[in-house]
Image 1: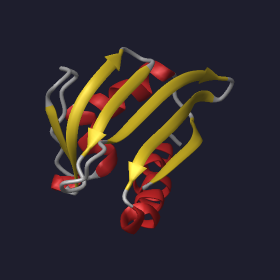
Image 2: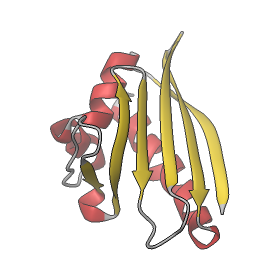
Image 3: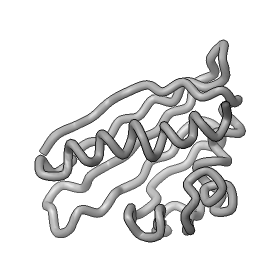
Length: 125
């Protein structure tokens, strides 16, 4: 199992980035795929038409999102934490993704950089 941490700069205020990450209609706008999302802790989510699925754990409006991402029957949960910080150019999004299966690590990192935060950065440019 591996962990990944990175900061991403997004040209929008934290309030807008938070909504882009939590509202299904906005998620679909920047991902181009159907999305199921709720800010209700314990609810399940689905992004990129089911390519990413998991459970929502915690939300702090405009500041923090914590989710469990599903990777089969692994013993330790894979936890994604996104913390949004105000930045001179908009938002600094701090990503921490723990317990990524070794076999999935490279694909997950590429997904974060290109599809997830890469697409979000392009959306706000």
